[in-house]
Length: 304
Picture (cartoon, rainbow, N blue to C red):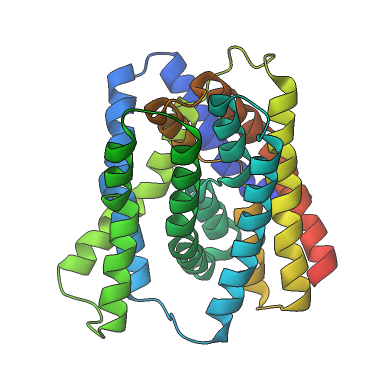
């Protein structure tokens, strides 16, 4: 566990650095808002395209990998929905997001830190499998529960999601056998190399420590879904259908990360409980510094 914590520590140091810089007004609040958009619209799509277009998407391992990830997503999603069925719709949708969403940026960074280039490649494939399913299922359920006037624009935005589009483009290049296109792939790799450190700083910059004492029970519910049920389902599937050390560990990393920072934006746009969502993201991010290495240790004892 100590080795895992030391390996993961740089990721959390960057998150804390991002929080400290924004709190100190360095350089400006507007800078962090624009930086967040740069990473989301340009840098992360470039990383996904570069990695997926050159990845090995064949073989049974991909289906087992997807099966493990989808099992965790399904049980956490079902738990979040069940717990929120009697809550007011805005609160219920934030509980749902907190239980089922994951932070792909942190998962990518930790996978690379712990497992190197192979880990990052596997994490990119994991993102390609999870991002469309996660976004479609969460947004669909939020649309059903909420009476937001902007439903149509949100659903249209989902179809224009840059991460989804970059994943589809990478798959098209991969299956089309285009291999690496000169200049295009070099540019994508250069942009992608900047994605993870910038995104981690942005994750920290968006943390909000005020009001964390509110809604403790609801925050606790999401922690059960995200830190217990999601990893437990993934580890169970991997126990009966092991893939290999790299993919097994990456699947557990995805399952054990805190919920996505993008959940706050989605809650705010669709009429969910944005303050509760901000508190969930902050608490889970802080807890994950301990829970993630612990989950990896448990997975290692069970699977290896």
